[in-house]
Image (cartoon, rainbow, N blue to C red; front, side):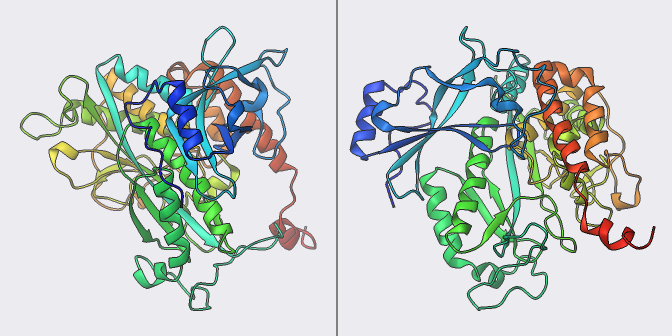
Length: 460
């Protein structure tokens, strides 16, 4: 396994060009993967011979890359971009300079930010959207800290999209016969895969905290260490790619679909979030004596009020809404409670220094940059407006009414109608994102499902 980069650190924002070129030579790097995350969270970019790579702004891509749908198509509504389809310029973030551990030739990866020729940022780029929300926090003297929990399934290779997914075969030669929540033995069935995954994550500098088996058959969950939201989103972005690559090398698929199998639980991306003061670094969710602060309650209230309006960012696909079903280990509303996993907003037991909110609404299929940005934006609006939350739920929130949009079309309308969120996320971004999602939804409506053939073919 190649060594981890030793020239990149949290304080390495301006690494001299000579040091980069020297590092590339020392590690005999053949290629550079210059990547950006698109609206879906797919890595888009270019492969460049290392001797031709320049850390200066200069590498270009078409602006329309942010309007590409998950199916590879482009929407009819392209009003969010210049009619001339101008170029955007990529600038490397040298804090995200990594070796790619699974390639045959020595390859490095750099995540880039996007700018126009005049130096202005591309406001519809997901990574910029998250940075824009963080800038809004900084204006108030605050800095968010987040830690996501990502769930995913390992499945047998599936070459026919009409065929249901199945759990893979482990070391025992058998697939899991039933649910094995938190089973160590069930995780050990895939030890060779996870050994490789841990090695890959170490090379990619992904700070994994824990790994456990979730409720579904061959469903796993990893926790990332808490950190700056952009750094955490970068790690989640890289982790998704790393686990898919690892699974392929073990003759399996790894999927982050929100609901990949009919009779199994869905996969979430729970986001733990707290806020620290830029002046002193203390958790502003707690008073000096350890009690909950008014800002903590307002943050919860902001999530309650605005989460339905950002649902298309937390549940971005038609499949996402199949996960959000009553009594299926997923929230159906924005109720909140102390250590209450039935609520959309859970307050875990913690010390005053670690007081936080766990947003349990986002699906694993969400773009991590956008899901984190949306969740933080909702809490910020509540803090700015001094909102008050409802009473905490002490029983099952599953017994309470649905409060979240039930489908992607409803979710898109909610975002279109919410002016405060458009301001904080960016109007160009909202316009571009909705055009992408409208196109994907229209494409989905043209598909005739097996359920329709089964129940309507000879009965209507």
